[in-house]
Length: 346
Image (cartoon, rainbow, N blue to C red):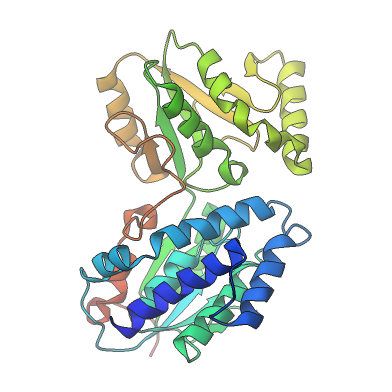
């Protein structure tokens, strides 16, 4: 077992011990700090509930296994040249930037990392990774990142313009907003619809892998879907989610806009892809060929497509190590610095 494989597996074990209340064998102090932050993230970021943070950590426990790690790493050469990689992570859902961090770690580079101010979890994980690595593989920055050889930045469309202005001259991966959609035929099973509900409501729908738009046949009956969503009705107990739900329900009713409403989520017919929190957009389609052409036309606006002949229902928040954001192979980028082109001043 290589050192980097062992390190990745150790991180998974550290998460598992924290989640399961097992003896803390990696670094008791940092693991206890991670457990404390997990339970008390809401004052920093109200969307980072203990349940959602635990769910995010569990996904990494499930992924960081010997078989999956070895399979992942087997596809990439060992980088021959250590570089400084500027990482700017988002803060919309827990541990959203961890995959980029693990890619940098696994390829032997050093990361200059700027965590989102509303993310209390990632800074602790950075400390834990540095302990496991036995060296400062990640150097945290509070201000603008400088002096990196390449950059990986994730944010909104607005922040992407900012990133491109500052980092566009350097080798980079800059990610913008993307949305996830689901295609329904009306023949879905109860289990599939419950899986779709998870794709919609996990992390309150704030992730780019969260389904924010449905494509349904013209005669689609939403009752079965509403029934499947019932297991997530607790989301409306969250203050910010409830405020969004009340606000948009009031706006739509006042403007006499037709909606479907089950008491905790609003379905609205809308051609848009990005629905507000507590709202799920839908559009009708005539036939599968027409819909496929439309999906293809949307291109780089989409992160995930769920449904028949696409991703299985219930899988959007369970990406594997090779499921790269925006379809850009981060590991291939990081293991081939000799191919980088740069217009940066020397």
